[in-house]
Image (tube, rainbow, N blue to C red; front, side, top):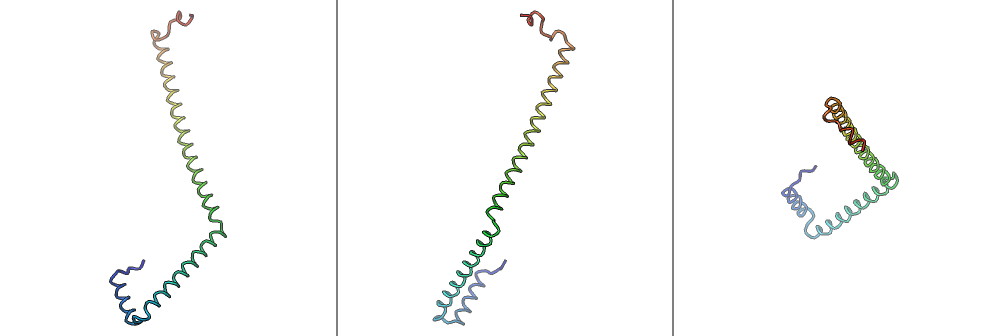
Length: 116
């Protein structure tokens, strides 16, 4: 976002040292750090409060549940298509086998073996 390199930061530090002076610079850096920490803490607490109010945890759980259900439906559809394909192949094989048995009498089992 901000394209600030080390050289630019070094120039800013030198100018700040010249303007502020070596006596007031450590105190100023401490004050700025303290304010930045407070601002960060305020943003964090505001974010947590906002998430709590709108129920982000519940929304995240619901989204996760929806994702799991989508995955389950996808898996179910894949399984059903696999079962359908396998069933079709088995039916085709049975039909082919029956037609081969009907057309070639030598492939039929003998009646003597079936009567036993």
